Amino acid sequence: MNSNRDFATCSDGTKIFFRVDGKNDAPRVALLHSLAMDHRFWQPVVERLANNAIVLSVDCRGHGRSDKPSSPYSTELFARDLSEVLDHIGWRSATVAGASMGGCVSLAFASSFPDRTDALGLIDTTAWYGPSAPKEWAVRADKAKYGAVRSVTYASARTFLAGRPDVVRYYDALEGSSFYSYWDPGHLTYRQVYFEDERSAAQKYEYAITTGLAGVGLWTLGNDAGYPEMADALEVFYAPDHEVAVSASINSLTRLTGSVRASLDYSVKNLGDVPERGEIRWRVRNEDGRQMADGTVTTMTVGIGKTGAATARISLGSAADLPAGTWTIEVFFVTPDGVYASVPSRFRQPF
Image 1 (tube, helix red, strand yellow):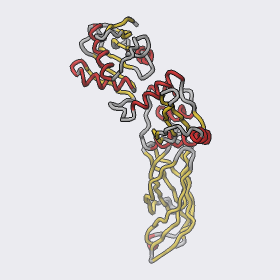
Image 2: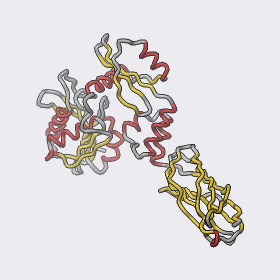
Image 3: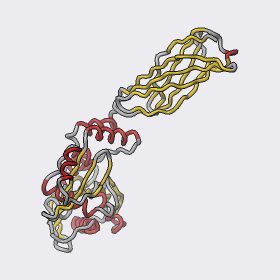
Image 4: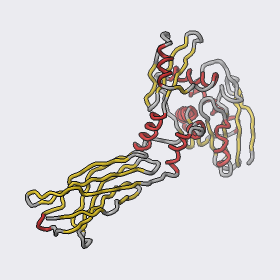
């Protein structure tokens, strides 16, 4: 893999470090890293792309080996820096991709330099971080400077907050976890307290997967790899284990105005590692194996390690058409990924 490292001097005198890898005559790709990272953030991706593309990765100003001027930064300024790096290496345009902050810069670049943007790659990002962004960026800058926030229990968080009457509390998010950001007048900066218990973490991951809201980004893969709870949650995206046990039985039959109705007990136990959602269907056969009735009861969601159970009243049909004898009932849990059947359960049809 051919590689070139150098600095480009921008119009305001700021030096931006960059690296170019790959084949000179191949498609051009520019990669922009997340906040508090540098060009090495993309190294595994560069190694994969370099055989088929020529890849530019930069240290945004204020990061890595690039200059760190004290003047204000903005995504538009980062986008201008990238444009001037492209000028320096002689590229007219490129596919521009970024993660998190880098994705925000990629959008700013496409907006400011549309003729230089061949395509966009946007990973775990947004075009706007909201009105509370200055406070949140200050907290994240403190993380980079002083280290990550400490995870504490709910009880200790309450004790901490109760013992700090000077704290101005800000509500940030409710994702099964809680964040409190506050202004520290002694150090003239924002601080943050984060707390999450094991139960809320599990509920958060289960909710995200069940509703289809979960996603896997480079930040998650790179920074949460040491947390087994997150690793277990991520595994369902590439190796889900669908395992469901269904049981069913008839506990009573009644005859009313010529129609036979049955009380059906059923349960669905999720033995896999991903929440399951499906329809509950049933089928009844007589002792000769002939299907006599079938139907759908409801739709059910069953969490990981959980059991869903209920009783339903079902109609078997007109007594005049139902020969007496020993019948069987089967219940099916029908999901997009498979059909799970109970063992046929025998019952007496006396009418």
